[in-house]
Length: 301
Image 1 (cartoon, one colour):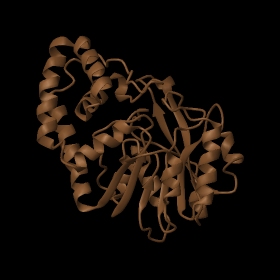
Image 2 (cartoon, one colour):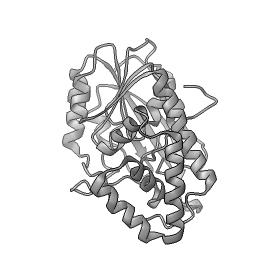
Image 3 (cartoon, helix red, strand yellow):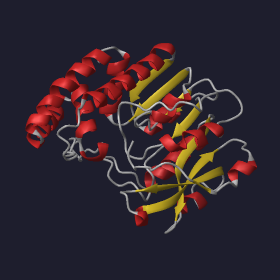
């Protein structure tokens, strides 16, 4: 990862890690690793920016994996994406919510990766959410002019960048649960986990609970690989109780930043993030919990 450039993926996901990339990068293990293993890839923003030579990006959401495999296999090229978004964007500007609903219904029937990209970029807050039947159910974002040429160019450039990484590195994308991904990791690999934050995110179609948190720790402990787990530490209202129970025997590194929703000052809050690691760390970093002022943050990538 370079300090000068942050690569933003073409897919947006809740729980963005863009502002924490430097923090994660600074706390990677000192020794090299053979492969980057990511059981909860989401948008892929962390792994993409670390630019590992070898990587396994996994997720239980098949639509995310299908999209990135379509890029890897050149089923979706920058030109294909550009033409599709221009055509569908024009229809969205003309018909608004009715057209959005049509595309959403079409996607839930056929699961086309281009429709997935379109919905992700035109739905409310760029959310990815599915119901129990795995149907995409995020409402329309009410921006009929969403796909202006500049916005399409931005998305196309993001696709170009990810495809460049794919062509120059050995990256694979697999749809499977986190347990299988961790079990397949080798001793010299580095596992980076960014599970849904327990006690905070409740809108995943495969909602995360204490049973999952316990299973994650168990599988990581069994693995011989080094690992990093991203989670929340505390905010002004409460602390993450699992850091002092399930994860208490591991080193924990913290940093704080400000985020806010909307433009009002009263919506501006500080949250402390944590990295849980099973390898030696710089103790000065581990004790660092001073808030870091950042640009306006959204809860969405």
